[in-house]
Image (cartoon, helix red, strand yellow):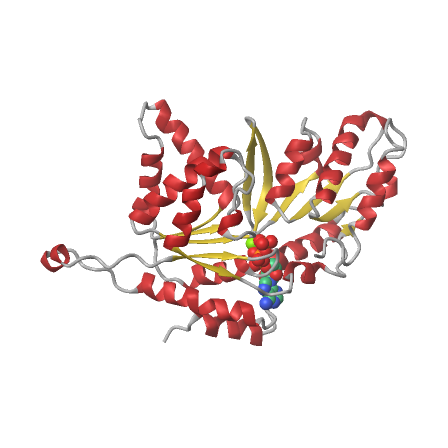
Length: 359
Ligand SMILES: Nc1ncnc2c1ncn2[C@@H]1O[C@H](COP(=O)(O)OP(=O)(O)OP(=O)(O)O)[C@@H](O)[C@H]1O
Ligand SMILES: [Mg+2]
């Protein structure tokens, strides 16, 4: 007899892996019902199948709530336990980028409706689509998602998604928002909207009191950072996350569940600016930034970008975990702008405190 999601959850609580949370536990039956429907034997084609009306596909689930509440954890639990081959779990950002790339290719072939072949390719191999971290910030995504989801729903694809906002607040104050409103109605019609209303930010909880600044950036520091990564991702190695911004591409080499890992050189040696760093801050909640060197006078550009990066992460309240050659005040002591670097030092210190970024 296979275990229900509630039984799996309870077992993880019993093993000490999770802390018992009533709000999380009460969301599980919604996912369990969906799992049962997806795992039920599919209608055979044939005469009977031809005349009987297919049952409507089950409603999807839109799970929303504050950061670190356990939405992604519940979604992963559900996806892992749902025993069907046609399932796919994707990060919303990465998924939309694939969609754009596919549409670009279709346009190059002079396809009239460029979204149709892209959606159909997904439909052909997917019955369960799990989107993590749905957020709509730019107009191109806003204009596509409505038609895309309509097509997926019509084909019977079950969509499960996590978000920090209720549907009515998606793309709030966005350009041409009226054109987006039908999508919000579509979500209400085809998905069960459920708030994960727990007070605990478990990510904060796991990081609070933990050391988050390691120097020197040696094997010990690397191992410590790896342990934090494993704790927050459940050991998933992550995938590269590419953000596209006005044609520029910024790649975070490893990302999973709101956490990304990149080196100082990945982010501060290329000509990136405030908009790029803001895109990173929006895409991740925890950034592990590795191998910050001691910067000399000749590293003026790198130092300047690093200041901008830290300012942006600070404003966005992104949690930051660092390995560096030295303490913050020793990173950049002599070049142009070393005086202004003091603010960065102060922020780096503040960002290490146990309750920094707590709501
Ligand atoms: N009940 C729990 N006990 C202990 N740790 C938990 C619990 N629930 C979640 N966590 C852990 O807390 C971290 C944050 O959880 P998760 O990533 O699922 O949050 P989220 O709601 O998806 O947050 P966000 O909105 O920022 O994406 C993860 O490392 C997760 O494993
Ligand atoms: Mg999440």
